[in-house]
Image 1: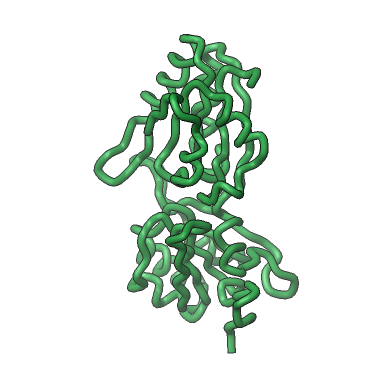
Image 2: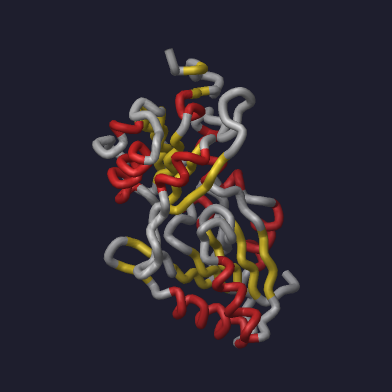
Length: 244
């Protein structure tokens, strides 16, 4: 580990989906700083005696991003080898960019280790290709959660783009998302699939029509896929195209 801090993508949850580089850095770390979406199996790879710091953001308990930024800088300046573990990929709604800027401003050496984002991994394990020839030629990845004061997502515009819409961190907003996509032009019968706790032993997949999304029993963390591809189940035990 040459850089003082490594911003490491931990993938969607299954430790087998870590990159080799990520696993090596975890094994060499002095301290691991992780978020709430890092799988327990990944954290089990942290060697005994290594300090583990949870800075995850959860309902009712959120470590301010500024404190996390300061923590990374302080640990690095203290001579610690820091692995900052982030669920999925650090630069896909993982605030890795904010942490990289803070490290740059502090003059701290760091590296970025890409990870598999749940935006593609969760649909894949459910047998859903986010693009599929003749079905969807484009995919839009969007967050369903915006910071206070930021403008809301223009779901109506996304409805007119076409292709596949993948929503991360959108479970609590699913009623609004469905209503605005339908108002924007998507047919109420447009398929959706929600992959809950993807790649873990607790993984479940909820499927239905867009006009059923608001009432669907979905718990976070979940990746929601909206569009014709959401009707596909191309797993080895699946039933292929679910659309009649």
